[in-house]
Image (cartoon, rainbow, N blue to C red):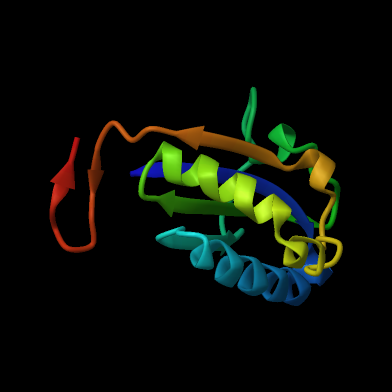
Length: 123
């Protein structure tokens, strides 16, 4: 398992546009081997004393935080899919994302421990 995580500031009034963009992107990523994608809209994101999600992405007033993650079979699958997706002309047909992509945070991670929906654990 390999996890790609994103933190994205999205204008509050663009929630539906983001949902549509995520739906298109999710289907595209799944076609290239992504096992699971979750896009989560801010519900409770407290301000921290030193750092927090908002500061991390320089969120502006009126923006909500989206936490998104993708589960890939392994790092090699993710890297191979990234290369192939950037060659696919549909990658450009999704249009402009409904957020400022320059403030998006992306990170990829090797899980240390996971417990799945089926009750099994990996570690």
